[in-house]
Image 1 (cartoon, rainbow over the protein chains, first blue to last red):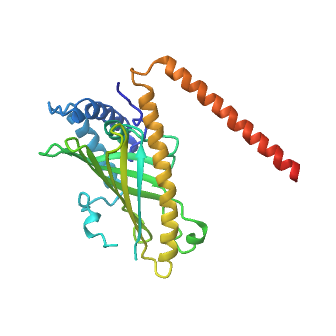
Image 2 (cartoon, rainbow over the protein chains, first blue to last red):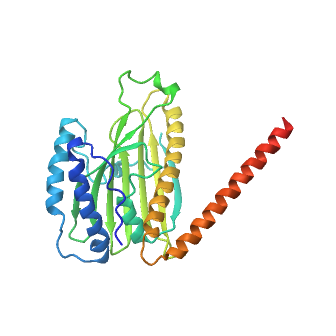
Length: 82
Length: 210
C-alpha cells in the first residue's frame, strides 16, 4: 500500500505549497516502491522536483533564511569532544 | 561548555516503514510547533545512498525569565536544518538536525541513527545524541539546562508522532483484516472506558477526604 500522510504541511514559500505536495506524493511513492527495494530505474520525480526547487529557493532568498555555506552534515565536524 | 545527551529509542515498525514514515511524519497531532517543511536539496549518490536536506520552520517561545535578556523584536520562528543519509544496502538512516537561527542564544544539534533492532528484526532502534550550547554571558548554564529539558520534551513528541504515523501506515496495509481492526477498536474503547472509570473513582475518593 501507499501511505500519503505528510503531504499536507505547508512550504516556507506560500506559493510553493502545491508544488511541494505534488513532489512529495511522487517522492513518497518512489521512495517506498523503488528506492528501498533497490530499483534504480530512473527518477520519475525529477521534473516536479526542479519546479518545486525553483520556487522554494526563491522564497528562501526573499526571506533571507541563512542556508548558504552550510556544509552537508556540517556542524558535526567541529563537535567538541565530551 | 556543552550539554551532552544520549538515549536509545525503539519504534515498533520495520526499518523500511520507519524510513517511509520519516518523510511523511508531518503533520501529526504532536507536531503543531512545526509550521513549514521543505526539501531544499536531494540527491542519490553513486553509492546509492539518498542524501537530503530538509528545512523546517518551528515556533520557539523563550520562557518568561529569558525574555528580558532577548532583543525586543526577536522572531519567535526558528529555522532548522535536518540533513539525512538513507543507506538501503546497510539499512541505516543517519540524520543531523540543528538550528540555523538564534544559534548564539542556544544551539541544539541532534544526531540520530536508525537501524534494525538486533533482537527483533521487525522493529527499529534509534541511537540519539544531542549537544546543547549557549554563548550568552552569565546565562549559558541556565539556558543550556532549559534547552536540555525542552529537547527531552521534544524527543517524546517526536516519538509519539512517529508511533502515530506508523500506526496509521500499518493500519492501512491490506494484509490487515477488518475483523482484526474491529477487535482492536473494541479493545481500545474498553480500555478508554476503564481509564475513565478509574479517573472517576479516584476523583470520588479525593472528594471524600476533602
